[in-house]
Length: 292
Image 1: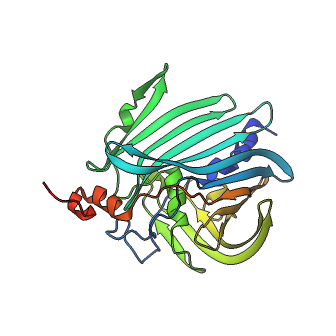
Image 2 (image 1 turned 45 degrees about the horizontal axis):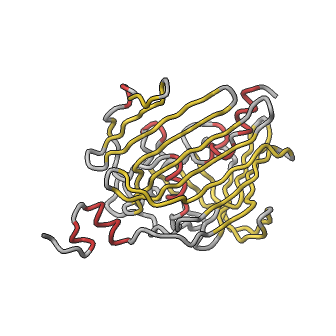
């Protein structure tokens, strides 16, 4: 197997989070005053663990976890981490991608990628200014964060999302079989639009158990397994959790699968909805606080 093929097979889990998106086609404009998703319902402590297989070969493992509630530049958000590790001895993968997500209206506050894939290494931070509606990129160079001149003060749309936060956005959509969702909310314009087609309901068995699922097909503007005409399918539990149960991809070099091995719903904190709305509006009166 060539190094290029190894990279495509080992990174089944990270590829999943290249989703970007707008509302159901024809139903909403790319920028909407009303968020199409429901209220955030994933508490601190929610964790999904996965095995990553290529054909019958187990390549590695992955996880997604709501780790904590942090404050970034005065804005409260959930710290959500997506990790992938494994691969053959000659091409080890150790990736960690973290998104800080404001729950209402749903948008990214910060996005960090710490990637180690074979000989490829990269540490990147995207910081979102939700007042100026811009983002900046910084990379670690010689051990220090350094601004990327060509990605400074880049305009974003309201409700801009990154690779990880878009996954949670998709989990909060009112998925209806036969519906086609199309969004322009990925923070980089070149990634838009992202399409999510809701295909069917299906019962499947994975290492974590047997689940009733909703099957969706993500289509993104990067080609490959998730490009238009691809055969990727994502299984989410058909309940309030919308946990990821299985991701199946089919490409010319073979088929990959991500299987849920363990799910913990979490019982930690949630940001009060009224507080999140007040932070977004910048008006403490919206949260019931008294003005001085």
